[in-house]
Structures are given as C-alpha cells and as structure tokens.
Amino acid sequence: MEARMEIVVDDLSGPRIAEFLAEHLRQLRATSPPESKHALDLEDLRKPDVTFWSVRSGESVVGCGAIKRLDLEHGELKSMRTSPDHARGGIASGLLEHILAEAWRMGLTRLSLETGSDEFFLPARRLYEKFGFSYCEPFADYRPDPNSVFMTRTL
Image (cartoon, rainbow, N blue to C red; front, side, top):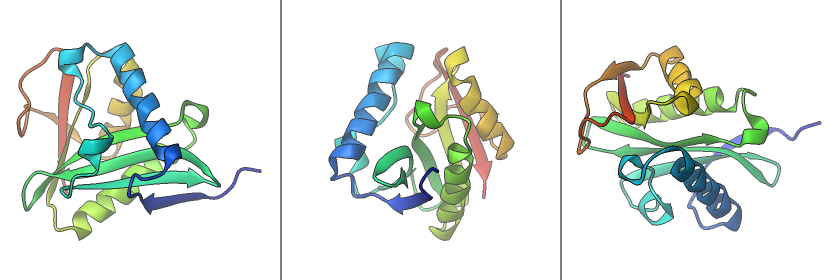
C-alpha cells in the first residue's frame, strides 16, 4: 500500500528534492533545445519571489511545482513535474489544484505558464487545459519560440 501523499512548502535544502530536480532538468535537456529550456535550477528556485512545493509519499519525492511571482497580481507556474513512476496517478492534478488555491490566497489574479510544444509535453498541456488554462501570447520576458507554448488563466 502506497503511503499518503503530502504537499509541503519545500525550502529545497534536502538531497531528495535536489536529485528530483536534477532529473527534471536532465529530462528537459533531452527533449528541448538549450535555447528553449526555461526551467529554473535549484538556485533560482530558492529566490524570494518563488514558492516551491514538493509532493511526498513517505520519504520519496513524487512531484513538485512552484509559483514565481511576476508582479503583485500575476504569477508564473514553474517546475511542475511528477515522477515517471507515478505518472497518471492524480499527483499532478492534486498539486495543480493546491497551487491554484495557494496562488489565489497569495492575492494573485492571473497564473501563466510556458511549456513545450512537442508531443512529449502533450500530457502537460492537456492537464493545464483541464484546469482552465488557455493559450496566450508570450508573457514576462518570453519571446515567441516554436518549441514553446504559453498558457494563462484568471483566478
């Protein structure tokens, strides 16, 4: 029987989350050209404008996600990842629901994201669509990129 899932604000100091994020960056490097990789590294995720959550099952990290505050009312969803061993188990949906509620509590009125345009990212795009995100133009410092799609939703 699998341990109960727990979503916690993570200070990113533990070795398990560091390895989980390193694997995330390795996977993205394998699927996206370097100029189209927009994932934040551990140092960037520790900045004060970022709130980071990990999803834990017992001692294991099975998912993560973050909000980077862009201004008083607009945030960016960053670093959404589910362990491949737990894909399609509801972790991403539960985490995204949690992050949307937290974004609203933080006073944000809009949450936007960048994700990949190729087939590898199709499950992510479908998840975001299911949660009310719609496609939009590049936001913040992003520029048009054939390897990226941009999505947003009001809260």
